[in-house]
Image 1 (cartoon, helix red, strand yellow):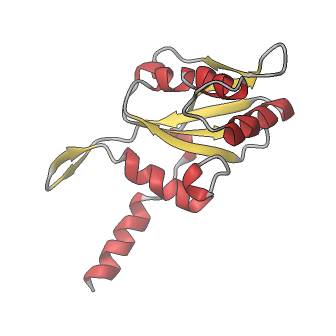
Image 2 (tube, rainbow, N blue to C red):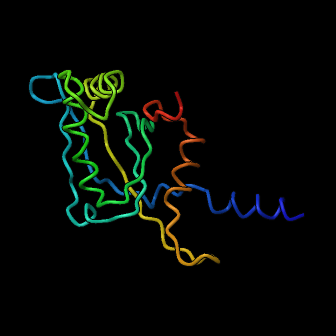
Length: 151
């Protein structure tokens, strides 16, 4: 009986309400076409911490789901040097195969990043913002191509 109850609660909590996500950034190819450029479009939202973000391709398909404990604007802008350094053959936390996929996607059309800061919930361990749990659920359900855990 207890397991069934937990499953019902989990399903209710893990329904994704896309209306709660707002546009935070756009990614496009640079002028030369050999790198990417990220533009943060909402300065107030860029300050939010503990958020979930999703990169969407030109057709609205999720290509990457992630979280940011630091301000989300800072996380979005980190894509520029990480991907561009990898494409240039320099040391980067982004593997070359992934950087090449990002470049291929932006060559097809501009990508959009949307984000959401879930509300804090009270637990027996104290208040917590469940952004990591929601991220894990979204990756499992959507299987975005650029999440390394899905390879």
